[in-house]
Amino acid sequence: MRHCRPLFLRGVAIRFREAIKVDSTFAPAHWSLSNILEKRGELDAAIEAARAYIDNGNPDNDGEARVE
Image 1 (cartoon, rainbow, N blue to C red):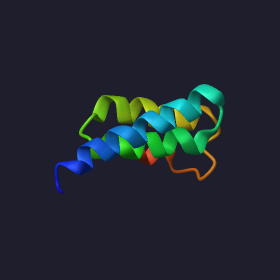
Image 2: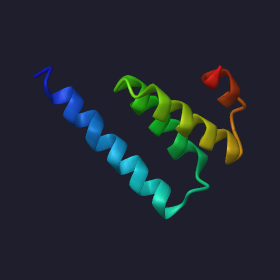
Image 3: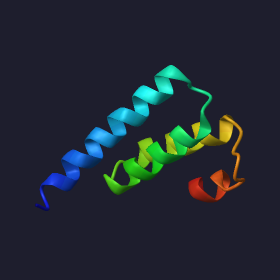
């Protein structure tokens, strides 16, 4: 079942991107997308999502540490 994990993570990333399209200012969606993209090995995209999280309020004040 290991092969299912990449497909699952791909689906989750799609859902977070859809949520961001609905409300691009919802910081937690950017944060979660960043985590998923990192797990998928898409580091540049993960950093971009973390920066979007910061730009949208950084509610937990942890965004800067993620992109360093």
